[in-house]
Length: 232
Length: 205
Image 1 (cartoon, one colour):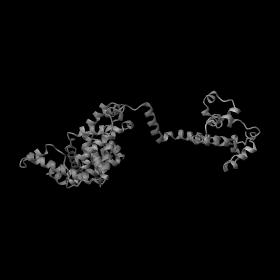
Image 2 (cartoon, each protein chain N blue to C red):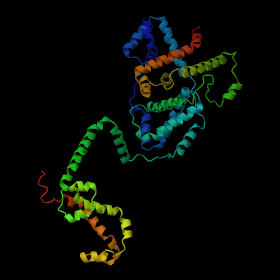
Image 3 (cartoon, each protein chain N blue to C red):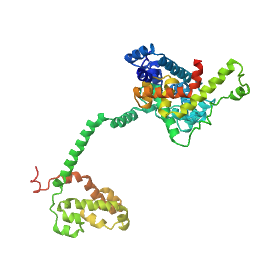
Image 4 (cartoon, each protein chain N blue to C red):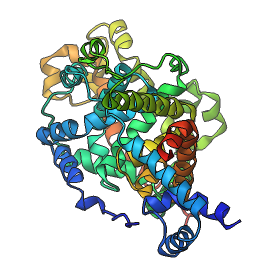
């Protein structure tokens, strides 16, 4: 019976891969059991035959073929070492796979949620209905969302001009140079560049709106009189 | 029996070569190729059974080492990492299904001197000639048994016997445990013993 429990350890015993306690147990059994000793000798002989098996040597053109394949794959024989930035990016990507980044990711996610809350609460401040002339509102061909939400009026004019900007080339082509010249020249103090080059008059109203757009943040952040008192 | 010594990755000179290659030292890669490519060819040949395919696999293994140089981390001995790649390539090759080695049509190692050797067949009347024939017979039997046993047993046996790897290193190659490797090696050796029974019995006469 003990032979059956010893046999599975015989190869590991010969290989020196048994813990000391098991090794001593097998050695003690082998000293008294001729059958297991014979089995162990046969297994050792098998291992010896395998170890002594003739090793295959690569064919003479093996190495040359390999270097040719390496060249063909577009790899230079000398490749520049990985730059610090590339290594940092690779380690970051590899690190993200691991769990050690979980707390940092949780922090970033929390920050994003907080920022989205702040941004979502912002329109209540900036969408206060402005004191627009009723005639101007009525004259505009308002889209349904704007008509439903009066708070969007403050942005509507700017948005409409943005839409014009997207069709800038078409509008410019339709309007003959000088069409608005007299009107604008009579109303405003024009920049010297426009006076020198009358063809710029075509673009001037839109350029003016663009200037307004640059100040959009300041316009939107300006408190609408009499409408902000409700907010903390 | 002597206990096997365990080596930490940074004590391994081949790991140092790989780290040098990682920093752009192409000569270090060439050294690794010249040192290990014959072993990888031999392993692939014993695993697959044809030398031409074994050489292609070995080249693919080293191309992969080249491509993966940046992501290499010395977590184990270099040879462990290398044979893990080689083992995976051999498994993929076997699993393709297109490629099956018939036991009857086993392709012996390419040997430029083979034809010459065949013309000078050993004189079987001499004891030396008998020994050569017996060794060839044993080698053919071993190869046939190797192709009959499961892939994991074959890898465990080849790496521990022909590459001298410890059970721990074989376990790292196979992604297994030392206990499992011990069992794989034992069962593979038992299969070989059965396949070589009459040859082994003749030793006892």
